[in-house]
Structures are given as C-alpha cells and as structure tokens.
Length: 87
Image 1 (cartoon, rainbow, N blue to C red):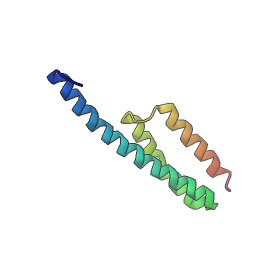
Image 2: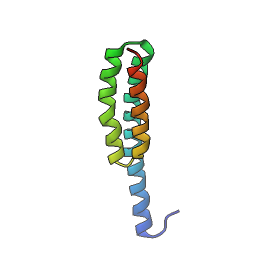
Image 3: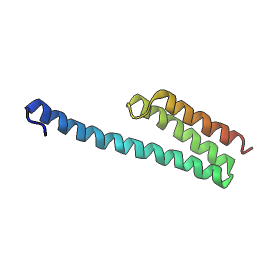
C-alpha cells in the first residue's frame, strides 16, 4: 500500500489513466469489430467504409500510448488485405 503522499498521488493517477486507456481500447476494438462484421457479411463497400473509420482510431491509440505503432500498422495492414480480397 502507498504510504508517502507522492505514492498515494501516483496510485490515484494510475487509476485514472487505467480508466481512460481502457475506454480507448474498448472504442478501438468496437471499430475493429465493425470491420470484421462487414468482412464476414461479404459487403465490400461497408467493409471499406468501416476500415476508413477504424484507421484513424487505431493510429490515435498509438499517439495516446495505448498501442504500439507496429501493432496498429499490422492490424491495419491485415484488415486492408482482407477487405481487398473481398472484391
């Protein structure tokens, strides 16, 4: 348990950051799920639109420190190739 005032403040800050990051991760996963569902339904137009919406969300997660840059790039690349193969 945190004893010093600095450690107590750090614990509070960690809780707040955890909540914010959790919300960001959840939001990004929702965008990714929409792309997955569009791919599964075979609707290329919807999949392209969903991918266009998901890309900036993923990269925003990178700038906010939720995901690593290569992780986001890999996810985008794999989704884009799956959307392209729908054609």
